[in-house]
Length: 119
Image (tube, rainbow, N blue to C red; front, side, top):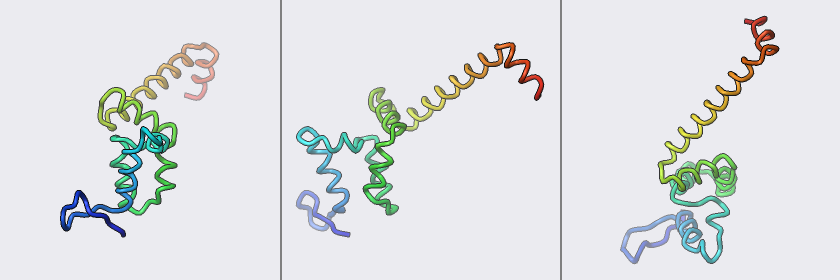
């Protein structure tokens, strides 16, 4: 793996992969590549972990551009909460909506009668 010196310090290096992602995030105002690939403070550790285990950049970009990941990332950034809190909030939201949907279906007499036949 290629490496580049950090800040002129002797013997301190970073990988070229990390350097390229750092350059993408620094140039985000001029060229919004970092935003396009969802590279930010929340997803940076995920990109780094993916690179460490050998995932190619195009695979990582595909994962990070998925609407669910973007939604979780935006929720985390907008509400200034850790990503695990954003995931928990999203899961609770889905469970709440499912519960309400099931309850509204069970309130419907036709559905309730059909449901009672199978229970």
